[in-house]
Structures are given as C-alpha cells and as structure tokens.
Image (cartoon, helix red, strand yellow):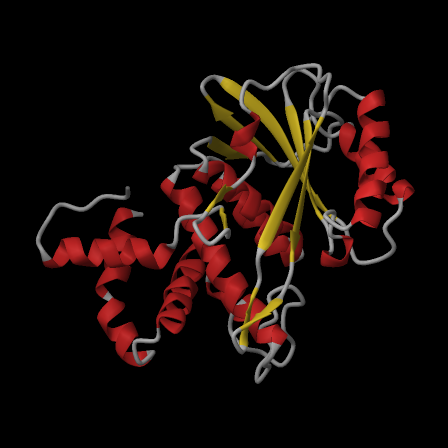
Length: 296
C-alpha cells in the first residue's frame, strides 16, 4: 500500500484546489479515494456517491442536508480512517472484511470495522475471522497483544423499547458464538436513546448484565457503544461514547482490560483511528523535503 499512499499524497495539491482548501472537504475527497481502492468502484457508487436511492446507514442521498449530511460526512471519513488504521496495523483477514461489506448491509460491517480499528489503534494485532457456521467458532475477530489472544464479538441493537429481556436474549445468543478456551469481549452498539448514563437506563443494563455474568463465565466484558448528534456553534458533531461492564469471575481473566476501551483526545473525543488526511499531509511534506517516507 505504500506506493498507493504516496500516489494519493501527490494528489493533495489538486484536491485542495478543487475543495477551495476547505479541510473537511479535502478529508472527504481523500477518504472517497481510499474507500474506492479498498472496496471497488461499484461499492463506492452505491454507498458513498450521492444517489436518489441512498444507503440507509451512509446517508448518501443526493441533495440531502441537515442531520443526514452531518452523518454522511462523518461516516465516510470515519470509515476511511478505520480502514487506514487497520492497514497501518497490518491486520489479517482483509478479504473477509471486504466480502462482508460487498455482500451485507453496511451498518453491521461499519460497526465491526470501528471496533477492529479501535483495537488496532490500541496496538493489538487484529485478525478478521471468516464465517464458519460452527457454534463457538462463529465470531467476528481476534485481537492479540503480549501473547494474549481475545475473541471479539460485535453486535448492534435497533431502536425500540429497552428492557432487561431484550438485553438478556441478545447476551445469551452471543455467548455461544465465542470459543471457551480464551478470553472474550462483546461490544454492543445501542441506540442513543438507550444512553446508559441515564439513571433509568442504567438500572436496566445493570440488572441484565449482572444476571448474565452470574450465569456465564465465558465473556470477560460487555462494552456498550453509542453515538449522538449534538448541536454545536451553529453546526453539529457526533460524539461516540463507550462504557464497559466487567465479569468479576471470568473463565480466562484478562491482564489488561484497558486495551479494549478507546483513548480520549484532549477535547474528550474518542480516539479509535489514525486520521488518514493527517498521514497524507505528513507524507506530502516528507516528499517535498526529499526525506525517506514510510507508514508510521
């Protein structure tokens, strides 16, 4: 990929001119290029290019504005940054990830890629696992660091009423998908209205998770993920939040649980990927100064 990155860096001056040097537009343009290279032009034309029949998750509706456009801009750039972070970390199983995006709905694939990127960003070696259809072996990915390998399963809940039973059903179904011979972590993306920081929601999550952990030692941690669209200075931003619930008596204890949660930027934003545009700009600067360049 080094030659591809170099070529993209060489395109930056032209892209800046086209986007009138508006950084957000430049980031989007370079993200579109990398996503096209990784997934192919057909996928790009369906999921990123503006259309009258947009992808439900990517919000690429032609002429859209408001919240839809905010989500679109974030998701295109975020997905690019995540793919770049995985490539930078030399992840394994790229063919499985690519196949999922080409054959499945975008939302679950996107969420899986965010979590895989988070783990790579935290310097874990990530491997996307191919589907097996075998109980105990049909999970999403493995993450390894310091000779400790962890099975990772990722799921998402749709909007609807939050109940203990809804959570319990999901937890029980996911328990059988991870193997029992190594630690396991479950990431669960939930709707913003299920915000676990709200007291009434926290009580429901607490009850469901405590009941589940008392009856199962296979999963070490359940990590909730949610995203909101918040107004800010005439615009908006979409912060992501994560909260972990740990099993007090897992079958295979983890020495370092912090590897599965994101680092925080000075402004409090979640850090789960390396910005692709930042990397290209550094690469461009090195090329201009004739210094040797590499992915770092």
